[in-house]
Length: 108
Image (cartoon, rainbow, N blue to C red):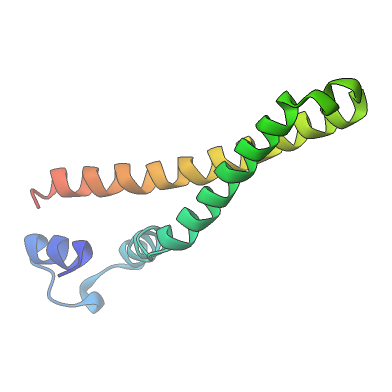
């Protein structure tokens, strides 16, 4: 039984048709948040972490010490990857927080 179904059961809602337009919108927002995209995001997150690690190792290498432009380029890529990673993880945290809040609120 999904979290939404458990909440419906707690609230005595028998059918999706019992919801108001605003409640339906909220329901669809929740479904989007819980839609199982974590697996795909986990793959992207792992890739980005690997790329950051590679670039940080490159940044420490002797050859790059001599090339100022290359060093700036690598630092910029690291910053970009870290920004993307923070966007991904903040979205996951929101989903986790919403799940925790709903479970607590409806004693599930």
